[in-house]
Image (tube, rainbow, N blue to C red; front, side, top):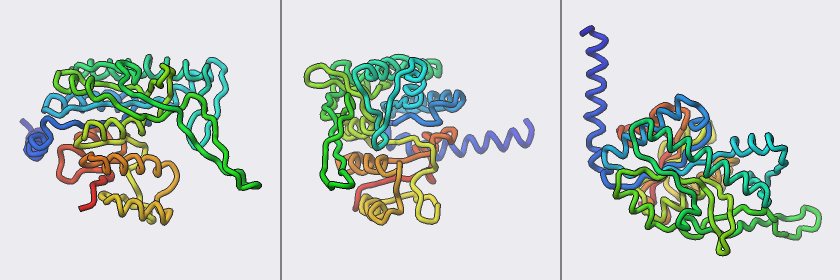
Length: 300
């Protein structure tokens, strides 16, 4: 064995030794992982993500994967020459569009993620929020204010929904088995109608319902940044709200952070915003002392 090989084996042994206490701590706990962005679009990162999820399950953690699919939906709509528009980052979803959204999310994307996890040695099962009424939803209401008259009006986003109830029964059964649930963010209304729901929102609601140990949001940035562009590695809900009020945190990070805050305030032990472009980012966060990204924990 060469010196380089010997050093590599030592580093591996140290890493395993460091990981052991975390494996014991989180055994039997639920991790809800929102999977999307660059991590899902890159083949190598997708394979790495699948292996990491399988490893989590094998050491006793119960991962629940919730995936997005905005770019893939957009590509399919373009291919079918169906125009769509966005309001506040949400795709206006009419009856024709919601059929395409469901086809892409519950069909091709969901089965790609399931297949990747199965190929990595796991046993994944794909679910839509319509399966067993897993995600009960209602129409999302958004208000806008006319700049001239200052009158508020309700925006009609079509079949864009928000989750009102997660049925934990099916997920509890899967957690007690060897199966890894992979959830498409499609909800069902009171009359059986289909709703397109933001995947971040679904992940947060599932995490809160299951009282998960961790809600993990994979993004395309290193985490939450301060005013100087430096990473904020840890914050309380009070600190997060202060930074948002002062517009230090703004733009697309705000809804992600609000989802994390809501989950933590409803009993999730910790929420994490991580860079999904970093290989093995799930393992680095879960099983190393330093961790990565930004963690939000309850005050006190």
